[in-house]
Image 1 (tube, rainbow, N blue to C red):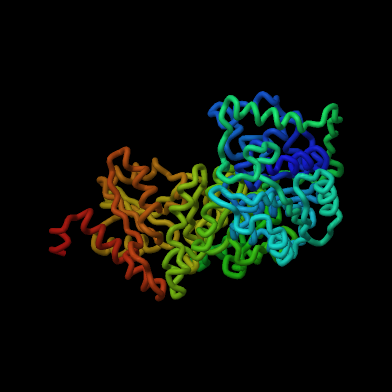
Image 2 (cartoon, rainbow, N blue to C red):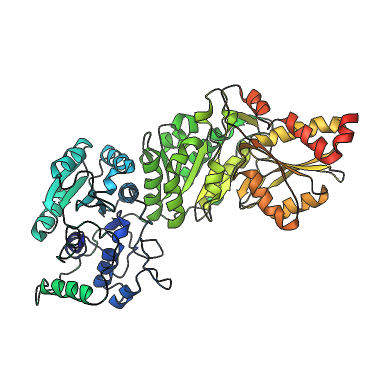
Length: 590
């Protein structure tokens, strides 16, 4: 109710959109960051004629897409909202997209005052002013009440003004229930150039119904059926202006550039030779730059680590499609969501450990089903001396928990480049884990890879165990193979480059061939990573898995020292193979 006047002004006077084509690329965009106000969004689209008003009575029912908070199951919703502080981050990406395609559409995002306590709001405010997004307009519904109590600043509009002004936005303070003031504010925002605008609307929760207006304790509550509800509806009906002309919806004007799908057959093969030493993070940067040449939809986002992730190669070649978010991972992922929702293919990258800071955004990106590509570099203890705060050891667990998210972990430069191209062509979320150390090029440039695949690197008819690695641990498994071979023991070595989906058929065949002796080794904590992925694949067949993983908080040191100390080196693989495949007695006898 506090936002109803604002939304009415937006939909029926300010925004330009085709009410029968919500996905028109030149429509002005509206994001409801305060997603719990979903009923006012649904009511606006019903009034615009997109669907019958009777559908509103199905709110929150299992047979309706009018859910408690908006999701892109609805054609007029770009990203899922309701986890507060995220809508404005997505709005930054949506506004950047207008610049990308050369469209004059504007982006409007409605926030709550309680939501403004979220740090991600101010990450977005910072990036919005840095990018000079004068096509972006935030509206803050300052109704003074949160879920459990009054908000931090109540109706202190000077406090809100100081904050938005400090972040370089153009603040406009209004009475959020004065229609003339609302319309003038939107006009002023449109005229403001070189910076985004923030309309700070003083409102009252429950506006229009005296029994609840400006009263605490009504957040998320419905009126009781009967006298309480009837009295409220009657009070609202008295406020309707009789015979008022229905405003005409404004239509979009100029069209932006339509970017066609790319011809990926033009992508050259990786330019590496077997035996070359190349870090997968470096190969990722080269692959992204190569993709940028053939697919204009690809954009890159960085969190001030471009010289370590090698995304700087994309920036040097395609600067206008590179967006620096600085050390603000939440807005980086949120803006990626907004860009993806409007047709871009965003690749956002930072260190794997810092990407987990945006875990809630990643969760909501999964709910949104957006075409976001994430890359976490410098994963695991193999980064070496920087210490545990820099070691991503939880990222596989986080990303595997997101339904329908592909999770990739290449071991060499060739597989990295091939898999980055697959990420770009894949319609949906994908995550790639890259490593800091240089690793030998293992695959021929013409080798093919696919989601849900793996590569058997060593095998024989006499394999005593299957050892499964990914990334840097593939090479520990190969070292173990060489050492065991000297002792007359053969093992099967698998590169599980696709951690989700996983190559269940190959794993099952290997388990059967090695009498159920399966060992995983990963540069990750034990929970949620490669060991769990393999265990889930083999459990229906009754096969057990011995899992080598990092099982305590690590420390600084050289990569090889750390991998040995924390149980994931070739030496540990050899020991486990001998115990599992040969039994303690034979190991003791040598």
